[in-house]
Length: 165
Image 1 (tube, rainbow, N blue to C red):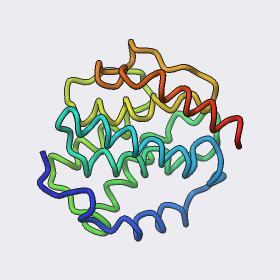
Image 2: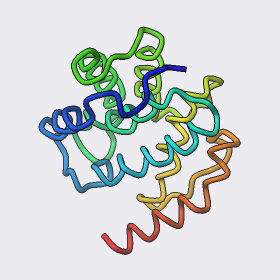
Image 3: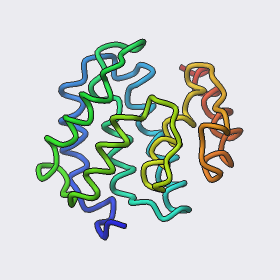
Image 4: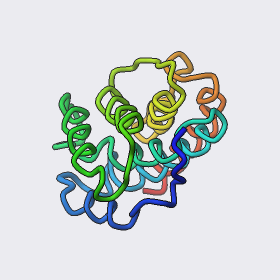
């Protein structure tokens, strides 16, 4: 686990950077509300499983940062992984092992895979738990047992957000 706590990076600077270059609506399905919910799920699950909390928080902010539209964008994970690499040592300072986990989790987050690494799987669980924002209830078969425990609460939260938006 990375000894760096989530509060020991330039969160404000990173968010300003990501938002300044974001090409789709900041209030859309992949915007800041989504990032906030993914961050919440990532830190909750990550604390339970001993994940690298800095990596999972960075994932929340960066995984959809390079989308060019709200719909089909197969290359957004690849672009976001490269973008994340370019931000290391500017807004956060991950060692090679942490950066490798961040890049892998971002690059493959839309593939529906399961991973044995608790940090990578926590990232994927956190993103998948917010599928309710587009009317899809997450499936336990695409989540770790720790992520699956949160399906019903996450889905209810997403339904409320859709009604109130």
